[in-house]
Structure formats: structure tokens, C-alpha cells
Length: 209
Length: 383
Image 1 (cartoon, each protein chain N blue to C red):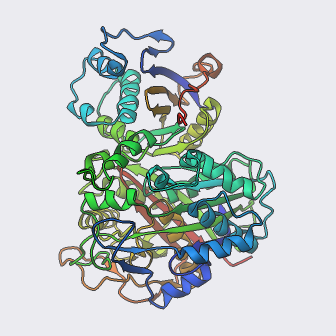
Image 2: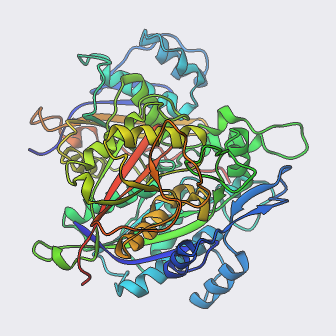
Image 3: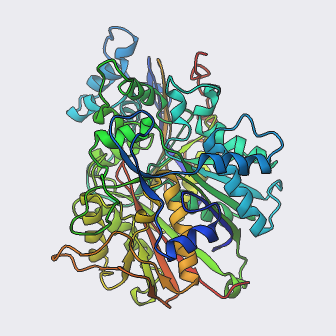
């Protein structure tokens, strides 16, 4: 059976949709506050969220949008994999950490920032929240390619153990955030056609100079 | 199944796989004390690539040596050396490049660095420069999965070659040290002021290392397995689902990754397990728990961190190069720095080079984000 998309969501710094339908988010004060407003609108209690960097917050919220109606929730399982992609790895947090190691201005390297200077931390955050013991992988590429993500999810689904893959583009850079996440399996044929959800990733995610 | 067609290591111990393997087999270490390291206030025990030799070697390879960072030069040199051995035309569309690094050129964020555009900060850009150097037409895959990246890159090679789209995969891992990386590990209090001592009762933390390492894999067609040489049979990645920067006390993900491999191999056929073995208190205890739970406590276990330090995104490739050579040479290499186990954990950690005739070896890796990987190699007659 080929791998198919069962469900998907799209989150930016100003909107969230699930399967193409807007997810209602309560009033927001200022653009940077959208992810926190989305967290509140999801009505979950997970204080670790506030310790995460923007990349992890974004991926975490996308995974909540996808998984909130799934049953059973939080049962430990090894058969769900997490496969993420983005363009700039953890450069947004890297730049914040770099500031803490400037010489001679009273700054000290921050261990709590340093641990977020790896892009795959977002896959770990989602695994911890959901008790997913399956494969977690992070790839960096110039542009989001739904077909490539589906193909690689299909490779994981051939391993004899994995039954579902959360495959996602999770990009956070300066003010621009964009996540696209899909739940991929082989059991819900025919699934959602990929062309319905193909979108071009934001062009804003480039260094200003 | 995919087989090793060429290999290379650029490190403190040499610029070829052969040179590095011989150094390790004779007990040499590239880890040394740097009293002053990139202006950081504390001395650093680390293994570094000789920049002068790197620049000279690269200038001999390329007519236009400018425009490449040290990391890119090391990676290109490494691929070039492995390709000469594999006799593969890297410009062919049947070849896929897979690049593994945790931090790439992150040092370019430093205000003291000059001369390179910020595009080199993007891992995909660096990967393209490497592939384009060899005229390869395909977009490279780039793995950035913390310290298990080098194993993930090899698993990606296994999957991509199995899909039939490519005949060869060039897996190259590269990491250079920077104030960014060193200060980060210092802030986590993970660095040992002494040469590291993997699995030893007195271990006091890890040493960092720089390296570029390459494995060129070829697809082995059905019926040709018997003369494949050293092959990668299987790999597994599992998450601890426990903590983003600390390993699971019970070694959950690492145990599950080993368990997945044990469907393919009997414990009696394992010549040795090359552990991650960073020499931090938590990592080595976690791996001990995982290996014990998997029923492999009788197998010879080693770590190569005492020779090269922890080379981060290059470690999975580098340590697979050395382990594959050791497997072919029927040797379980000594764990440099190891003297005495913790009494309650009786793993068979190697304290000297030992004869090991079995056909298979296992490579283990663990990293931040809770990721754990295990790879299974098997030797056949050489082609």
C-alpha cells in the first residue's frame, strides 16, 4: 500500500488551519504573540511549552493540532516516527546563543539556550509530549517538497515497525514562522491528495544582508 | 544491502582512513591540551585538524581554493580521497551526496569571523558546494540530527540505494570546532580537563574533536552479496521520549534501536559493539543499561572517543570507517582511556586490541533531542 496523507495542518505567525479549515484563535496582542495565543486556544496544560525556543513551539503546536483528536492519546508507542525538514536549521536560536558568548560585555554562555541550538530538538519535544519512542529525524533543505517528504515517510513505513509518520516542514527565522505538518500512513486509503496541500514556503526566511 | 566502496578520514590523526586506522591501532591519540582556544577563558582538551596541512592539501586539489571554509575544504578533501579509492564518477546522476553536520559553519555568526557570505551558514548551501565541486547534478540530502547524524546519514543511504534511484551514495560528515560549540559544551559542564576515559569508573566528561569523514556506498545487487566486502545491513533510530538534553536512565531509545537490529543478527555473531562512549557519566551509564537490557553484555564493547574526541556530526561516519576496518581486520580495538569498569556494570569494555573473528559489528550513537541510533555491519569476502 502506498503512503497517504490522513490529516494536515498549516501554522504561521498569524494563522492556523487544520485540513484547510481555519482553527479559531482568540484575540492576539501583537504579531509575536500568536504562538502563545494558539497554545491558549488549544486549551492544553503543558508548562514546558514556555521554555521552548520558537522552532520547538511552532512544531509542538502543529503536532497538537494534528494529534489532539487522536485516540488513544499519550499511550507509549514505538510505531510513530517524526520526520522534520526546514531551511535554516536552528539559526534563529544560534544567533541568540552567539550573543551570550560575546567577549567583554558581561555575557555568559547560556546552557538553556545552547540546548536549543540543534534543529532536531523539536522532534524530541514532540516525542516527549506524546511518548513516541519511534524514529526521529531532521533534514535541512532549500525548499519544502511535499513529494520528497512523502517519499521519505514511505521509506520509514517500510521498516516493519512504523505505522504512522508525522512529517513536517518547520521553519522559524527572525519574525517569520511557518509549519506544515501531515500525518502519513498506509492504512487510510486513498488519503488527501498532495496537490490539495502543496504550498510554496515563505520567501522571507533569508538573512537581511 | 549496501557495501563500502571507499572511505576517508581527515582528522588530527591523519588525512586518510588508512593513516587514521593505523594510528588508532597503535594506540595514538589526537586529543591534546589547547591552553588558549579561540580566545575562550579556559584551556580546552580537544582534537583538531591541522589547518596548514588542510590548506596545502586543498590547494593541491583545487585550482581555485578560495571561497571554501575550512569545514568545506575538509569535507571536499575527504570525499575526493574516498572517491579515488572507490573509482566512482561522482559527476554521474546515479550518485547521491548525503551530508551530515550538527553546526556546519556556525562560526560565521561570530563577529570576529570575516571573509565569507552568510549563505555558508546554511547547511544545504555547504552541501551543494561540496556536491557541485565534483560536478554532481543531484540536490544533496542534509541530515542535522544532533550527534546521531552520521548514523542517520548512512541509514538514509541504505534507504535511497534500496529504492533503486541511485547506484552510489557519498556519505560525508564534517564538524569543526568554534567558540560557539566549545563554549556551549563548557556551559553544560560536559568537558573533561583530562583526556577522556570512556566507560571508566573515573570518567570526567568528554573531549571535543574536529573531523571530516566519508563512506562511499554502492548498491549490492541480489546474488552478489558473497563478495560485498564490508556491508551495512540494517539501521534503526529510536527516541528516548524522556529529555531533550539528558539520556534516559534506562537507555530506552538505545535499547529499542539495538533490539530492532537483533532481529537480523544473533549476539554470538557480533565481533564488537562500537558504543557512542562519550565518557560523560550519564551517556556511558545509559549505554551500559541499553546493552545489558538487549542481552549483549558478553559482547566486546569499545569507544573511539579517546583517539578522536567527540566529533559530533562527523562521529557516526568516522567511527563507522574505523569500525568497518577493524571488522575486516578481525580486531576489537582498545578503548583508549578505559582502565576499570564500575563494579555493578560488568560490560566487556576492551582495554587492549583483541582478536575478534565474528562477521558482524554494531555502531551505536546517542544525542541531544533524545535520539539514539544503531547500525549493523557485516563482512563478506572482498570483491
